[in-house]
Length: 345
View 1 (cartoon, rainbow, N blue to C red):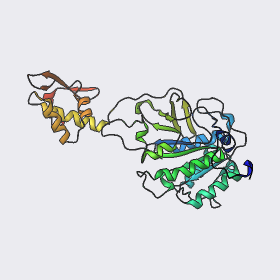
View 2 (spheres, rainbow, N blue to C red):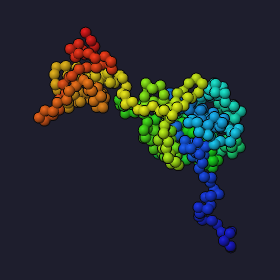
View 3 (cartoon, helix red, strand yellow):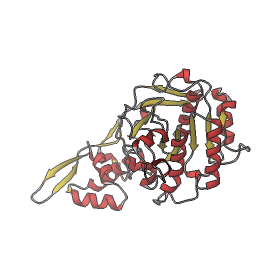
View 4 (tube, rainbow, N blue to C red):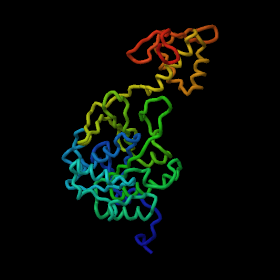
């Protein structure tokens, strides 16, 4: 038996050259061929609108990317859209509103109302055949939660996403998967700064090589923020600002910064608590913090509420807070003597 006919037990880096294509970026460094890109945010901010805008640009590459740079996608490209949440009726209206070429938007099944389930091997096999036949530039999965019946907090999520990742690599296409985030800590702004906010098992974030986040760091600005919190293939880029409008997504390079604001209701509650707690005179800070915790007021919220309300004094063995003056509303200053139990006389 000569060398050429022996059973091959291993492969080399030379074999890798013919087995898989190198990662390339149609829009550097936002999205790459051959890997899963994850888009996460809180419900209702506009993840599907972002995905539709990505699809619109892949279908019309002359539009360029979000930031105006050229988009490296062939003309007359197709996209495959995997709806998993019975949202097709709304998609129909949005496709029409955006003027998208409907003949180049492919649903994986002959019945366009069929949902795609990534935890069903026959669906994965069918999707493989569709990608081979259609040869799209982009695959969208909206959303991950609707694509399976498993527990997203289980590490077995890796086995759900691994077949999808292999399909995307095999067909060398871009893939955008929509997902949700965990709730923020109590009384903190709902912003996303790390992959720990990605809902479910860490296996979900691990399978995605690029992760985008959509959040609202400064509600007063009128703009949302799209940023990149993970990229295994290239350096991350500055975030972008955006507005979701009836005619689509409007982009700006001026992304809003985090305002650090606490939800108004909680801050108001903490201010009223402080006024009542200190009305009769100075008290140890430790006692105030203990009572605030019993009323469900977070320490960080209490400290923000204390600004411009209390004076802190060091005693022999403890710190004390005493009331200074009260600002229940940002532009509305009142005297503590006029304030009783959270209401004015």
